[in-house]
Length: 227
Image 1 (spheres, helix red, strand yellow):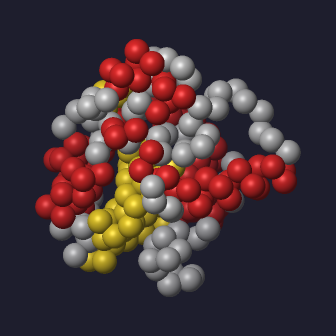
Image 2: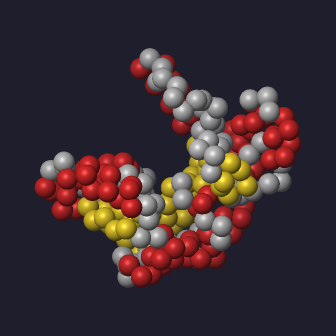
Image 3: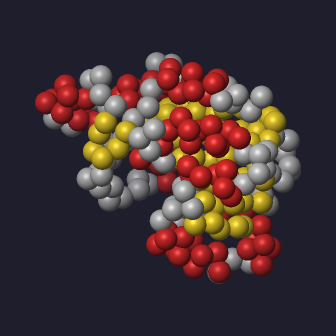
């Protein structure tokens, strides 16, 4: 976003599948007008509780809607947003093309579509590095997996999503890898000391922008721009 839009521009942002609103609230605090769309009632309730503790100006810039990301046409007009975020959602959508077309539809010309998806071409990395070679072998050529909560998920491939973005008039502008070195960390692992954490994040950022490392990241961050 910082590289796409002028510094200080107040953006209209839609966060699809916002969860408990952590990302959306950060953007509202930064001065943007944010709409959070979430289908899980408990997540929406948590977001409302958190929002209630924010200053009035932030509450006025934040709109919460309980709804499905596959039904954006029922909630929003075409071209209503400068930025649409869809992070950690597509892995639970079996037929994502229609949803992606709907997200592109609500983008203004020149708007940014930001997707965070599971990388199907790297599904063997986590079990392989953990020494689970039967699971690693089964992951080759697959686009399905089970996440750490035991829920089934679906992964995407860069080439296929690139073609989809071109087909919905939001062609790929840039892409990055996410969790290149840290995907194997335990969920309850303690953060390292501040100076070590700084180095870790620097290494992840560098790897996520650099070939060939970013191609084996657990997640892919794709940015399309509406024509």
